[in-house]
Length: 405
Ligand code: PLP
Image 1 (cartoon, rainbow, N blue to C red):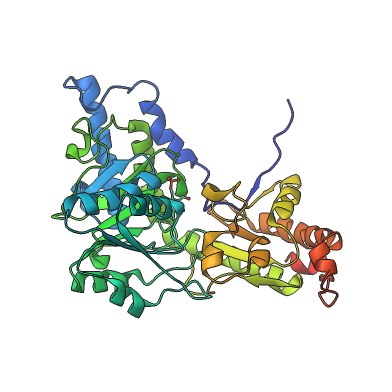
Image 2: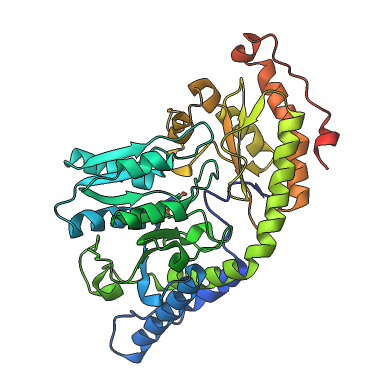
């Protein structure tokens, strides 16, 4: 049998490895305990109990009450459901206020709603990826149904001042939704302190499998379901529950809570060492987005004069997984809408790589990346017409040894 090659995984914002403890927690619901939670007999209703246990665990992760948690199929569904509910529960209000750097789960749904006759404002960001809160405040109108602003950007890791945004929305009595998909395990989430009305999470970003998410709906917030059908989730989300996925989500939430401090510090250290080494050792590189406040695991770097795709292909040959932006926009020829909104030129945006680390990354893995990356960039620049057109641009990199600590 051929030995499996080591995967140097630096794409944790796209998805994460399922933790062994999480696999263990979900397996019974794929084997012996496969009953339908809505069934009246014990074989089914036992699985309903497991759904409730998991609900309590994910509620603890965000300091919510269990009944404020609605399980969904993914972050995208939760985002769509939030916008849908805001419009459906407030028929007179047809304006949506969001930002130009949201995940496509918000961007594309808002664009669809615009075609359906809603008005949508996409707030701009500055070169650091930050929002102008004064402009946000001014943009809220009497007919604004919802303000939806992500907590942390999936491409740059830039963190928005979500507490202040929630306070502005509260003062204007307008619903506030935040897409917190990239936050758990990296930052503390306390919905009570935050006082948002709606919040999105997705299990596969925190070491649980794909295909399960949640929408937090603050108690007393009017909610109109997005999926209509059976009475699951107290009538707030129809469809037979993904019991195994939900059990996995519950276990992953416990782990994320338990390892928050320790992993945050360690992963931040790895990320900082990687980023500083790249920026100092490879010429014509810049970080995209503010240095702080930023997720501790994310680094988005522009490598001028080279195409991100070429870098990714050569990285792949040495077992390194990274990405050129959101996984959901891979394959699109357009430069990232996030970088474009930050004023990054299309030429530069086409050479940007997102490295996103996670709890399984090690120092040795960072060394492996740092050992090979300078050579890859040098090789690509040597054959790059864009680079040849800039004779002042240096191809010299520091010796690989000095990059890998
Ligand atoms: N929102 C953000 C910020 C994300 O990063 C993602 C996934 O990349 C999503 C939403 C969509 O989540 P899912 O893949 O579970 O649909």
